[in-house]
Length: 82
Image (cartoon, rainbow, N blue to C red; front, side, top):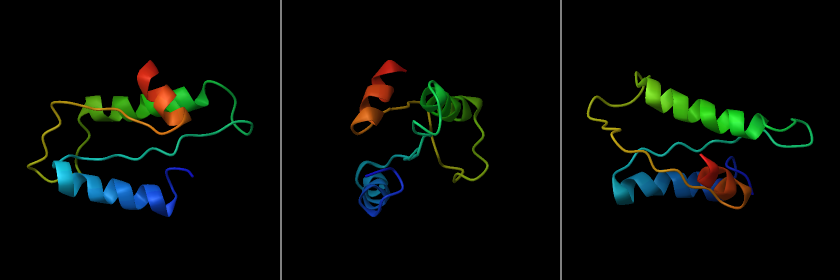
């Protein structure tokens, strides 16, 4: 199951309602079509997006003073390396 599956989509839509957080689900590029370190590059680009403060699409009340990274399976391993 990937980040674009119904299970993960439902989970990511439910989580902000329960913990009052912004959730970004990243569907990073996978091998063998994309060579290492493309998956790390994709994750880093998301962190860079958050750090740059490009929040035009977020509500004005959004506060992103903390960032939590998590993942499932390989995504979990990627999350702990950042």
